[in-house]
Structures are given as C-alpha cells and as structure tokens.
Image (cartoon, one colour):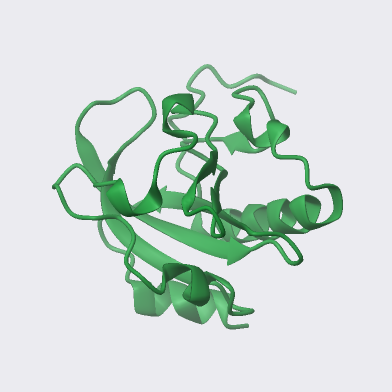
Length: 152
C-alpha cells in the first residue's frame, strides 16, 4: 500500500464520520475504555478529523486526542472560535436519541489556529454517561441533509 504524504489533507466524508462514531460508541459501550480515544496514533484519528468524547453525567470533556488540555473542561464553558457557546442545555438528551444529533460550530482544523465551519455528529454510548462525536469541516453541508443520513 502506498502511504499518503498528505496525511490530514484528505477530508473525512459525512458517511465515514457516522460509521466511526457508531463504531466508537459501540466500542465504548462494551469496554468503557476512554484511554484509546486520547491517542493521536489510533484508528480514531483519521484524515482531517478525530473521535472525541463528552461525559454527560459530569458535563465535562472526557477524551480528546488533539487537545488533551480540554479533558475535564466544563462543557457549558466551551466556546467556539466565534465566541459562541458550543453546547446548549438539552444537548445530552438530543445525543441520546437513537439517531444522535448534529451540531454546527466554528473550530480550528488540527494544526490550525483559525476556526473553520465544523459540523459534528454526536451519539450516546449505550449504558455509559458518554457521548461520542466526530465532525466534518464543510462550508456547504446542512444539518437537515446530514440528519437524513443518520435517521436511516
């Protein structure tokens, strides 16, 4: 197999994000192992995106492979690069729906300082307090379109 020099330059597609989030939620449900989601070199970090995990009981960031300094941070205090609160009350309830939930915000791509439009898919890991997520950096996709993909 040829190794790609431009790692991280490939854009993750919405379908990949959905599949990875579902797989990660299932893995976390079975193992309860958060540590794997803090590793930069792991199957949970790919192309231009990564899996991150929120704890809906404690309302904090539970795992983050790119910004480990965020672990333990209060969810309600996290702001995107435009200064908007990332999470609203009711976010955890929405993520617990079988289809999960999509949120749009501005966030830097890994290795960048400036915020880009990011839409992330959040899904509860059954039997745990955790919500697993990953996002796409996209200027055109709408939450309505993406929600059609996850309601199937």
